[in-house]
Structures are given as structure tokens and as C-alpha cells.
Length: 266
Image (tube, rainbow, N blue to C red; front, side):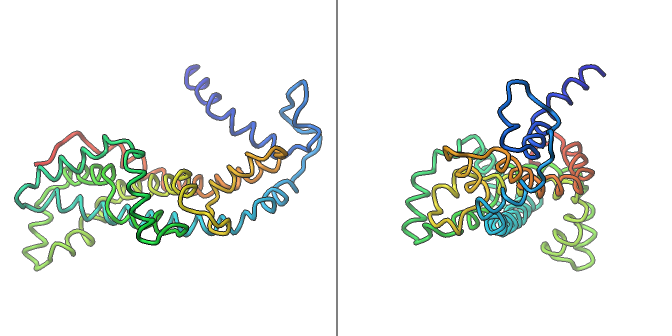
């Protein structure tokens, strides 16, 4: 119990400190003796902090990109996972090994050639490099979905085929609803990854009105005259969508992680 309490405090301490700074005035931030409770609560920091970086414009950009990216990653991973798990075709296990093996490659390995490709396509300074690759499948999500499908008997597929259902109907009307825990898990991970994505928006987006929140907040914090109470206030609002999604999906999230076994491709 004591170990859990220590771990909880260690994890909550940074968040509580951020909340404290967000509610302080400029004179109370850098004090000799740290103060947990501000002498005065400055709730206007949340308004001023969002105005400093045109927060809501960047917020809309991040929401738009994250939603499309999440849909692409989850949908494409489901389709690829179904094909590798349920369909029989030559070289199936080789494709599975190659696809899953790509997870071993660091992301920055293909950064330069991919940047050159997107530049040649005229996608530089657009949102396309942040969205389109999401529709090509995510190896980690594909692996999760394949592992979850291995827990669902193929008798469901056979019964549906006897009733005249095709592969598309079997996947989206039968298997996906039965795989809701792992689908929600993929949604949480995909949205979190896209929302917090920093390197790609920094590389591809030049115009400030196209920036995402992660880039905007980083630029705010890099100024010499950073007002940390404004920054922390904006950062708290930045975290809200992730907290809301996890709050509503935590039940399925835990089921999804707990139900994925170690079975391989059969």
C-alpha cells in the first residue's frame, strides 16, 4: 500500500505543480520558498494564456488532424489485421513478419527520404504529411488487432458466411463490435500520439496559422520572456482532450490490454 501511495504521489506531483503555477501571479512564481497554494488565485491566466499563442485556432488544427489521423490508423489497421488473421493467401506469414518487423525500425530512419518524397509531391507546408500516412496501417495496432482476433472463434465467421455475409460484413458487423475493447485501445493510443506529435508538424508546417498546439506551446515556452503561469494554464487546457478520452474509454482500455494474449499467427 505504501509503495502504491508513493508511486501515486510521484505521478501526481508534476500535475499538481502545473495547476499551482497556472493559478499564480507573476510575483508568486519564483519565490525562495515554494508555495503550493497561491496567495491569490488568478483564473484570468487561462484567458490570457490562450490569447498569447492564438490557442483556439491551433486547437482546431490539432483536433482536425488528430481525428482524421486516428480514423486512418484504426480503420487501416483493422482491415490489414483482418486480412492477415482471417484470410488465406500465399506468403501470408512472410507479410505478417515483415509488417510487424517494421516496428523495430526507429522512426527517424526514414525521416529524410519521406520528407523528400512529400516535398516532391507538393505536400510541404500542408497537413497531408500528418494525415495521409495514417491510412497506410499502423504495425503496432495491426498486431494488437490480430492478437485480439485470435481470441474470437472462427465459427462466427463460418456461421456468417453460411448466411451469405461477405468479408466486409463479417469484419465490420461482427468482428469489430466484438473487438470493441481493443478498438477503443487503438483509438486512445492513436489520438494521443497524433495530439502530442511534435517533430512532423515542426518539419512540415511553416505558416503559423497551420501549426498544431504542440508546436505553438513549444514556441511559447522557448521565448526569453516566457510567462510560466500563462504557459501552464494553456498547457492544462491542452491536456483536457486526452484526459476526457481516457476517462470515457478507460473501461475498454483496460479490457483491451488485458485480453490480448501471446498467440501468434495461425
